[in-house]
Amino acid sequence: MTIDYQQNDSVLTEQVISSFEGTPDARLRTLMQSLVRHLHAFVREMEPTEAEWMGAIRFLTETGKMCDDLVRQEFILLSDTLGVSMLVDAINHRYATGATDTTVFGPFYIKGMPERRYGENMALTPGTPAVVRGRVLDTAGEPVADALLDVWQTAENGMYSGQDTAQPHGNLRGRYRTDAEGRYAITTILPVSYPIPTDGPVGKMLSATGRHPWRPAHLHFMIDAPGHRKLVTHLFDEADPFLKSDAVFGVKPSLMVAYRDRPANDELARQFNLAGPYREACYDFVLDRS
Image (cartoon, rainbow, N blue to C red; front, side, top):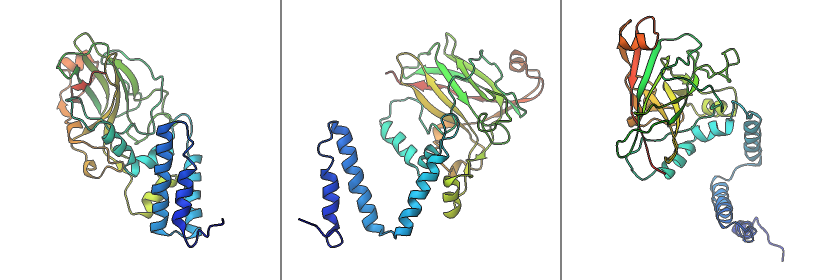
């Protein structure tokens, strides 16, 4: 029997949902059927014109064209700016355990950056010198030795190495390990607020909707230790003006830190070979056991 979908479009939806009944993987079957149900409901509610539908296809096509295997992931950026990344984060970390809060991974991580010594300077470009230090602990307050902290941030021009090909390889990136007492120390430069890339479809979407592209100043951390759950998070400068309007909704109050003025030639400056005044932030990370 031929069905007139113009007269009964709900039958179409049910036929598409039924087409996935034979999916062997139960979770995939549930995901696909739910996707169809919600996507069709959106189309039914908004009744897009064919021109609008083609515009959406072009937007997704251009988003894919802006992705590469190294430093640019426009789909992650799209997910971030729509709040989907933080919603997934919230769903997967909804139970309070005492561990440090998580936040978005971001689109500019690069694997295999240099392993650095305790307190080594990862800044190869100019900026306000800064030391970030503290401990990595478990939820019982015990130190986590030999935890690996993968750290990355932008330069003063608001761009990451790799994204900005003029920056030296590995600039403002590094992998640090905690000592036997769980201590870590990173010498770097003061992070700055910066706009997410606006040269692609996500930037056009923000412009068309009157949204700004700015992220507050932060350092990225991915912390891993045997027997513990991997932590992906940021540390935000508590003085940044964009904390309440982060373009990717990633700020959590528990992840804000103060950068204190420190004088030249004090004990810490001598330990980490800092020639003049600098800033210092202290933060203890707490990991869940796996």
